[in-house]
Length: 241
Image (tube, rainbow, N blue to C red):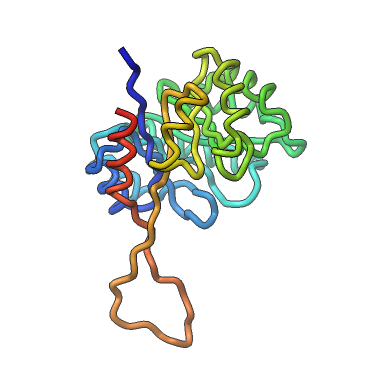
């Protein structure tokens, strides 16, 4: 019997989260600030999602955009946000810490995994900025991470499939390798077949025009709203089932 593939959708607001869950997502990665690569959702956002969404949800825990080297104060913030997510009843959290030399921040990662327990921990695409990915993978396994989100250290995962396959082989079921970035219904089967992954990740992101009726023309702003392509989620689900 073939193993079913799990579909994680990355979402950036409440409406998108609800739409993605209704379209058949198996799990949500919950973020704010797409333009910054994702930051920690607000308390109100977290609480509303927990009340409205029944499928597993993993909030992103990242106090700011920019690099992935965090100060002691920022590590303390990350820990507090992890504990809040645990208190609110989430199923997992997503974070990623690097040292300034491009290695994994092993000690803080292990401490935060311990603080998150029994929640699952996904190490996000900070991994794709690290110096030695195969060495880093062993560090994440030792630290107790559940999975690592990666595009194989390329901007698009379709260009990093060789590394993703190496990671799956090296992981040997000790950690889940979650491919993402550029994954869609036209390439998801190729990604699965060539790497042997058991979970896939995408935002299926589209932009919706704002419904606001008045705009001050002297204030040029992008009022469009991040949303999710419901039909694309359904297409991916149909393929991976």
